[in-house]
Image (cartoon, rainbow, N blue to C red; front, side, top):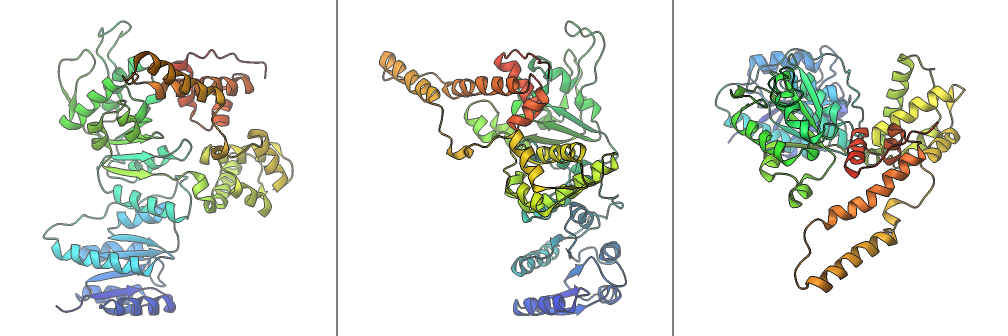
Length: 484
């Protein structure tokens, strides 16, 4: 078989040389150019089995050229390289019909492997191609970062905007799960439809089914009129189910039926309603662990987890902190707060912090120091004082031993049970009882320290405010607001 030919376009001669040599060693024929006009002529003449092009070319943007390439030769795979490593670059590449997007710098072996796969996919493809979507608007979503972890997320987002596949976003509180969900909607095929978000942890358990599926007038006490549920509100668009791990089992059963059959009944309704929504779910909890505990349906998990996206906590990508800081400083100034900068020492101190509240905690810190501290530049000392006031110095979490009372509780419970019932195993639920023993004093202490201010208590604990409200309700904690 004749070796495949790779067409390369990059205005940097050094990159052209490296790519030519690398593809040549891999057994390909290579033609390389530094401009879009020559690349277009080669493609129009039928040359090449794949294209590898930079976005920035001296005579025309690679993004502007892409639709013409795809129109002229729909089955020709085009791989796009870019040094502008943002989410919008990945999304625009997917929108314009690129086979793959690679942020610079990239691994040559990855590029060669992807190019080979693209050529094989093209050869196997028999008919049809995805037409390019309309041009994407400006980068107006604050998903910021150039770390390898974020680059992979951008690539997944770019691919998923072109589909209706169900996505589950996994990440700690404050990592930006709803931002990713909004990006999937606003740059996807359903962008003209509504984006409806509902937080499972914020809705009383007895009202979740009515909230999701709606209810008919008179269907229960207090139902004075018909209510269009979130599925109906999201018709033709995207329904974002946040904190899906907090959904009660009975609601999980109804949701599974909707996903399987594509229709549902309102509470009190008799006629089925067809639904046309894309589902995006999110959670900070380990759904597999919930399945093992009997708190989450395994069949629903597999329906939702078609494409999982894991958002890394901020502590796993400290290199993104300078960009995030600059973004939040810009937003603060746009909103009328003073224009400030941070010293290099301040940035370095922030990169050392563990950020239990993730990006939300970082944003709050930036707003606070900009609003409160005088001077145009924020020093490392100011950041140190702010971080210490929010999180007093203590041993790292992985060095803190379990409180003795909890150890005694577990050991004592099991010893007493086996003394009375051996060899029978104790009834299930010890794990949850232990969690309650830990959560009750911890949340109570956080509320006491913040004079009952639930927003500040949630920040202190590093959890979502709605999650805190749910735990306060479930644990029966009485909140007393102080004078402060």
